[in-house]
Length: 376
Ligand SMILES: C[S@@+](CC[C@H](N)C(=O)[O-])C[C@H]1O[C@@H](n2cnc3c(N)ncnc32)[C@H](O)[C@@H]1O
Image 1 (tube, rainbow, N blue to C red):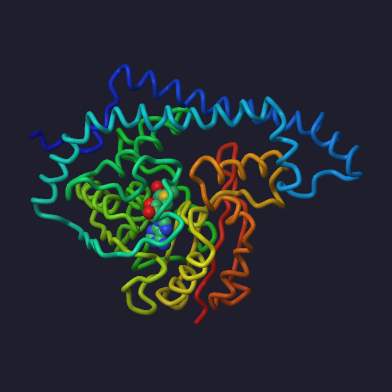
Image 2 (cartoon, protein in one colour):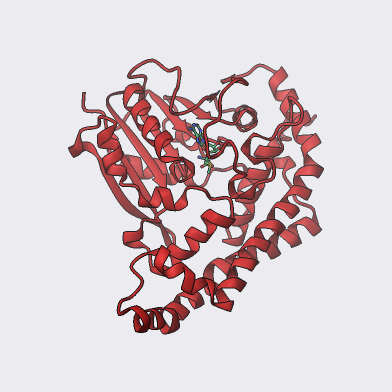
C-alpha cells in the first residue's frame, strides 16, 4: 500500500453521499438558524403576551413556557424537522461508513501490526455509567459503544462523519480528509492565553472520543507526554490508529474519567471538550474529584463545553434545548446547564480562588470554559 495513503485519505463520501450530506447540513443549518429565530420572534410576539395576559407574568422557566410552545404548529414543525434531519444524518453518514469501513479497518490493522509510537490500553470489562450506557447519544445508532467484531470501527467513523457534516455545513469541511483538529487548537490557545507560563510535561484529554482533537495538544506542546481517555473501546481504538497514522506519539486508554488508574498528581494539564454536557451530575462530581487527585501541584484543569446556562440563554432556546433532551438523545443538556460548575469544582476540593467559569467567543458563537488550578 502507498505509504502516503492514510486513514484521512480513505474518508471520502461519494458524489451522491456528498450531495445528500450537503442537503442534511443545509437543512440542519436552516432548522437551527432561521427557523429558531422565527420561533424566538413567535415567542415575543404571541406566546409570551398570551401567557402574560393569562397569568399576569411572563413564563419564569422553560417548564412554564413549554406547554405554550407545544400548542404552536410552527414549534411542532420545528421539532419534526430537527428529528427528521437527525434521521437523515445518520442514514447518509451511515452509507459512507458502511462503504468505507472495510478499507478503514484494513488500514487500521496494518498500523496496529507495525512499529507503534504510542500505546493503547483497552479494558473490555469497564462498566459504562448511566445515562450514556443506555442512551443512543445524539441518537447515534448503536451509541458510542457499538462493536460487532473486535476490529469494528463503525462507532468512531459515524462520530467522525457527522462532525464532518456539521463542519462542511459551516464551510469548514475537509477536517476528516485533512485529518486536522479544529477545536483542540482553539482550546490550546485559550489555555495558553489564560496561563502564559504553562509548560506541561504530561497532558490528559478526558472524553477524547476519536482523538482527532487530542492531536492538537501534542502539536502545541510537542515535548509533553499526551494521553487521551474515553469510556468507549471502539473510539479509543480509532484514536490510537489515527494518531499512529499521523505519526503522532500519544497514549490512549479505555477508562472512566471518574475512576482512572493514574497515580496521584500525574498530569500538569487536564482538558476536556464537550464531555460534561453528556455526563450525569453524580458522574460529573466524581470526575472532578478524580481530576483533583491526578492533577499535579500547579496543574490546570480546563474544560470547554456548551454555553447553555439559563442565565445567558433566551427562553426559546431553553425550551428547544429541553426538547432535545426529551426527543433527540441529549439526556443531560439541561441538567448540565442548570449545574453550578464552580460549586462542583469547589466541592471536589479545588480552592475557590482558583476556580473559573467564563464564556469565550469563537466564530459567531461562544464556548463555556470552566476549570481550576491545583494549588497544593
Ligand atoms: C461529545 S464526545 C466528546 C468528543 C471529543 N472530546 C471531541 O472533541 O471530539 C463525549 C465523549 O465523552 C465520553 N465520555 C462520557 N462520559 C465519560 C466518562 N465518564 N469517562 C470517560 N469518557 C466519557 C464519551 O464516550 C464520548 O466519546
